[in-house]
Length: 215
Image 1 (cartoon, rainbow, N blue to C red):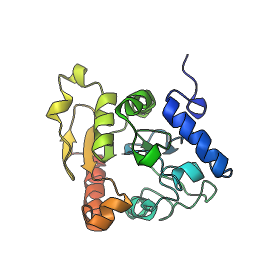
Image 2: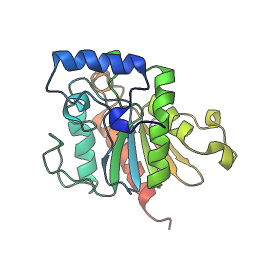
Image 3: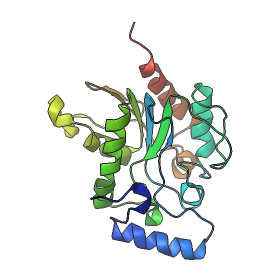
């Protein structure tokens, strides 16, 4: 029987790394970071993995990370939260019809999970999607895009992952869910100009548009 998320140590490299980080940062969360938000949300946002001094420290996805304000600011702008910033798990922030999770729940060394770690953690993502049945998934980055596809019943739908390519701003209308792609709002992507605040807002707007009933 698989252990609950908080007790998961299925990836030896990640479990060992968290033990090391906990020793040097005793006040940090340093466990698999659970999803945050409405458990029955129509919009699921899927990031890559917790950041060292962000979600790994606070225990909430994208909280304390350099890209936190960009993500949560846009969620608030779209009317899906009670505040524009996520500061801590005790800040009273509530997401409305929105949920945030990561493809990999544990902090990976150098922010780079291996393919096998993404696959192993995919069991949790599959359960999240199966339970909540979101109508729209916003995938932040190509790794998250592929993780989402692995968690969806593509075979039942007669689809192949190779047919659903990642591209920023692209909307994939799948049988039971719309998958929207965005570059990950990481500090690196923002600093290099690969992703601008305007580009991210556009992707967020497309995800929200998919929530609206077809005319």
